[in-house]
Image (cartoon, rainbow, N blue to C red; front, side, top):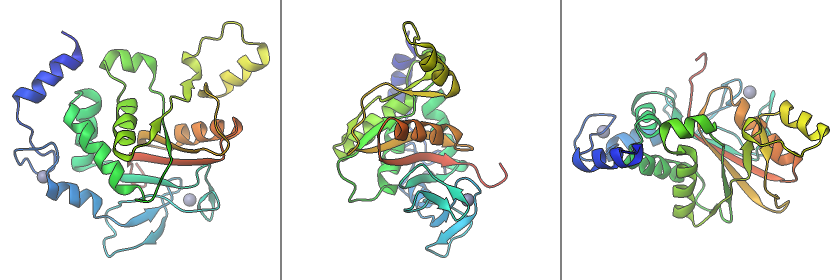
Length: 242
Ligand SMILES: [Zn+2]
Ligand SMILES: [Zn+2]
C-alpha cells in the first residue's frame, strides 16, 4: 500500500485531535489557531533581533520580517522584498508540521496552508508561488512533496499560480552542460530551471527557517536569473539561540 493511501485511510478512520490542546475534531482547533496567529513581534530572521512589536505580547511571534529596502534589519541584508513566518517552531505548530511532513496527514497540510494565507497581506495579487525544492530522496521516502502540496493549496486559495522554477542543483542532470555551467551548479544549491518574468512577483515558500541559508540562496539565484520582486514565507522559525 502506498503511503498516501495508507494515510488517507488513517485520516478517514481516526477523528482528528487538536495538536495544541487535544480537543477532538480538527488537527488544530480554532482556539489554538488563534493562539498561533495572535502573535505580533517582528524579528530579523538572521540575527533574531526584535524589529517591531505591534501588540503587547512579546513572548510569541506571529510575523517575522521586515519591509522594504531589502533589509531584514539595520545590519542584515535580505534578498526578499518582504518575508513572513507563521510562528515559532514549537508547540502545536511544530506538531502539525511534523504530522504533515512525516506522517503525511493531509488535513495538516490544509491547516498549514490556511495559516500561511492568514499571515500574508490580504491585498497581495498576481503572485507566482515557487516551492523550495525538496531533496528528491526525501520525496521518494515520504511519498509526497509536502512543500509543493502546500504551494498548490495556497495558490488555490488565493487564485495564484505555482511555478516549479527551482531545482536542486544536485538533482539536476548535467549531461551536455558546459564546464562553466557545471561549476556554477556545483557552487549553489539551486538552479533556476524556468524562464522568470522580470516584471513578475514571486513568493518562495518553505516549511522551516533554520538559518535561512536555503531560502536566501534560492532567492539570490532567482535574482540572478532576472526576477526582481521576490517575497518569502515559511511555516516556522527557531527561537533565538536554537
Ligand atoms: Zn486546540
Ligand atoms: Zn538582523
